[in-house]
Amino acid sequence: MPRLGRGTAVGLAREGALVTVHDAHNEQAAQETAALIGRNGGRAFTIAAELGVPSSSPSGPSD
Image 1 (spheres, rainbow, N blue to C red):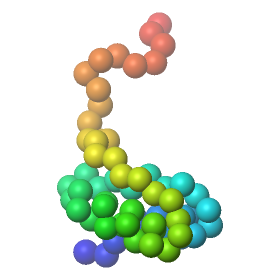
Image 2: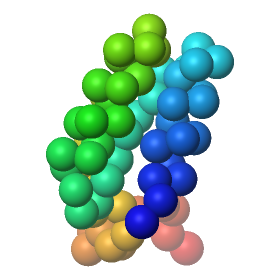
Image 3: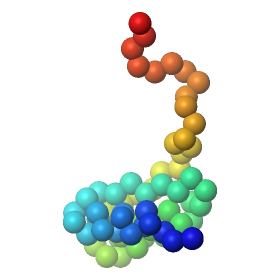
Image 4: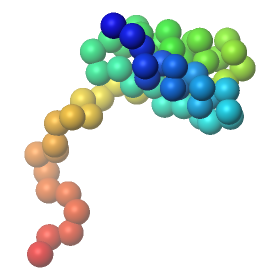
């Protein structure tokens, strides 16, 4: 499977962005991407979170 997010992250870091790297199913891949960015002089960190599941607590203003 191609790593489209990896290419985007590396490109953004190359332009000077501080990149957050997330992979919902493969923490090692996220770590490898962050390390690749660092080896090329960029800045990146990883997060591990389930980003696709809504919170069970209410968010935002209520009517």
